Image (cartoon, rainbow, N blue to C red; front, side, top):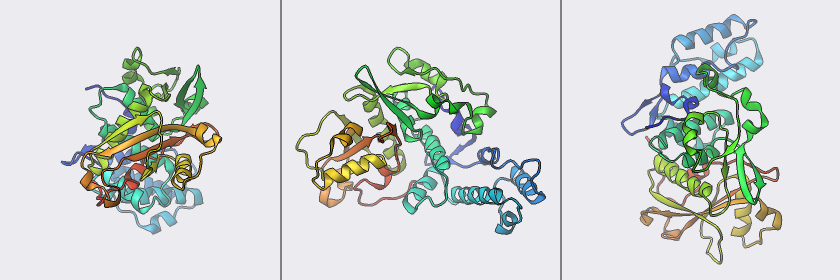
Length: 335
């Protein structure tokens, strides 16, 4: 089995009998290594003492008075957010269960960065035995913003941070800690170069062709199947569509904010305007392997998934919509 996505930190985690990832001390120490949490030279003793105590015991209970004793207001806020997030993870048996609970109850003050890191890690688990690099590259849409451009008639998605050059300052401290390369030379993934993905998976420097009828959208469909199965225990088949005519839109899920806006218009019988149609990236048909698990009013009918980009040509996928938006009779968190 070829390894990939070292930067997500999966090597620091254990596995539960259920297959989910279990939080460890080493994993929590990665958060303590973030620049926002390392006390600067002029930090007060309360902040330095708290950081040192958690490095020694990352599971250690922290009372609010310890945080309130920190002199710097920004540092206090950072610690409040981190400890709340850590405690949420520790209240659940697995990272998967913690993530699903966050999505259903609301993320509160949890930073989007932390949410995306959870998605990255959970996908690493869900795709652990994936042999097709195209599926792994497509799965990057779940946790990294993509910039879309039309090139020679093809719709090409490339990692926004990588092409903007900010990848030189990686969000994850693991990139620096593990000495992973950050220099990028963008090329579109294809059958000829797909084998190089394994060595460069943490550089996010391969673009993806999302043109209708091509391998990119089909690979994204496979990644979504794995995601739903891993987190909800639901076997589904997802197919990329190139067109949709006169099909009853009984149920749909927008995979991002713009797609939800487009779907809402179609749901209410409105004609999608030209701008909306230009922003449409992908349309998928999802079917339950066991229709009896669906809500009675749509049992046996297909669920349509919509993916779109913003007016600025960005894709900001919301994979949580696949967990909260499907017509499932009884949703239970993974353990």
